[in-house]
Length: 486
Image (cartoon, rainbow, N blue to C red; front, side):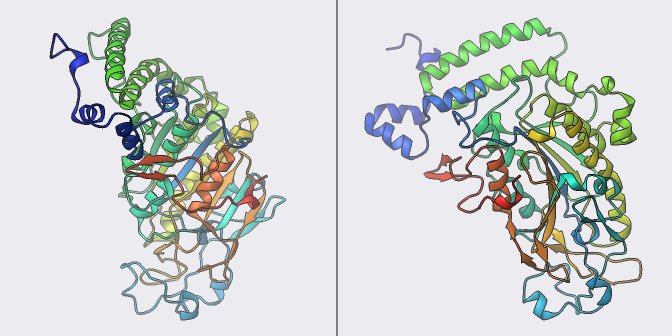
C-alpha cells in the first residue's frame, strides 16, 4: 500500500492498471501482440541515442545522407532527359498509342488536345561519361562524372501532397515515419550533440507548393526520431535558448532533477516515451552549444562562398543550406534533408525553370565537389530530385517561347552521388517522346530500398510493430537496384 496517494509510485494510468491486474504473463503476451511491449534493447536504444540495430545488416557504403529535395516536380525534359524527337513533332497531339489511356490531372484532362512541347533549352554531352545535361545546369555539367543519373524513376501519385509523402514515408497517406526517422530509429546517432535528422527549408518562386512538418515526422516511432527543423535567423532551432533570467548552470541542475523524476516514473510504468523524453531534454541542452557552432559561417574562407555562390552568405537560401548541410555532414549528422520549393511550373515554364536552376545549380554541384575535396563524398550519399516529373505536352496554349507542363508520375529523373553509388552512370530510358519508361524502371520503393542498402540496412528487416502489424519504409514492396551500386 502507498501512504501517499499522490506520490509518484502510486500514479498509474488505465492501460498500466489493466496490464498489471488482469492476466499476469498472459497479459504481457497480449500487450506484446498489440505492439505495446518494448524490449530492454529498444528502451536502451531510445535513452542512449543508439539505433535499434546492434550492427548494420551488411557492410555500409554510406554513413550519412544529404537529400536535396526539389519540391514541385522539376521538368526532366528541360534538365536531364534529352528528346530531340519532340522538336520534329512540335505541336502534334499526344498519340493515344503513347498515352494508353493513362489518367491525367484535372488541370489538363479538360484540354481537347495535348500538344507536344519540346524544350527551348539546348542539351550537350558532358564528362567522360557523356551524360546529357541541359545548358540550364552548367555547374552540374562540370560534375557529370560524379553523378549517377536515373532517368527511369516512376511513382503512383499524380498530385503533390501524396507524391511527396510517398517519397518521404513510403506511403501516400500521412502518418508514417519519414525516411530520416527510420534511419534514426535503425542506426541511431553518430553525434550526440546534434540531432540525428536535420531539416532545412528554402523557397524559390513566389507562392510555391507548401511543405508540411509531417514530412519529417516520426509517425508512430518515438518522438526523438523526428527531424529537427533549422530556421534562418538568430535562433535556428525554436525553444532552444534559456528563458530570461535562467543561467546555463541552473538549466543543468533542473535537468538533473527532472531526469531523476522521469527515471522514477519509468521504473513504475515502463513507458518508453519517458526514456525518449529524457534523451530529448539532454540533447536540447547540448545543442545550446553545438547549434551556434555549426550555423556560424564566419570561419568559412572566401573561397567557400566563391564555390557555393554569394547567396551562401544569406541564411535561409538554398546555397546557404547546402553549405550548412556540408557542415552538418562534417559533424556526422546521419540524415540531412533540404527542401527547395518552387518547381511547379504549369505555365511560363521557360522563364520560371531558369530561375529555379540558377538558385540550385551552383550550390548543388558545389556541395558534391566540396564533399569530395574534404574526403567526405565516399561515405556521404547525396540525392537530388523531386516527387514526380512533367508532361511532354503543354498545359494550356503552346507558343514559340512559352508553355507549361502538368504533373507526370510515369517517368522522371533523379541523380545521386557518392556513398557507394556508381559514378558516371546514366541509368534507364524513356521513349522517344519522353512519356513512358522503356528500359530499367525504378519505383519509389526500389529507390528507398537502395538508399537503405547503401547504409547497411536490408529494407525488409528494419520494421516496427504498430497496431498489430509490422511496418517498414518500403511497406511490402521494393527491390535494391544493384546496377546503381559501385
